[in-house]
Length: 102
Image: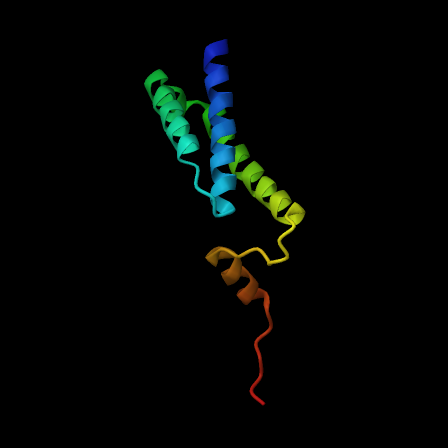
């Protein structure tokens, strides 16, 4: 893999992380989505989507996005609790003990 390929993959990781974090925070950034799409097309044209580096980027970007979104929620002055995804709600419901009828 040459230096240009590495730069494209690094840019894709940064854009993906930012896009996923913004999405988890309920924000929409069309400029970020456009740049992410253009970078994705460039990755596709160069055949980089089949590389192990691309797969690693996708995993790291997802983890970093969760981390960034969590930090943003913690540092937010808004006292409203963060909303849970349906997956988080299902997990927390599965962990609660069953309630007995009174």
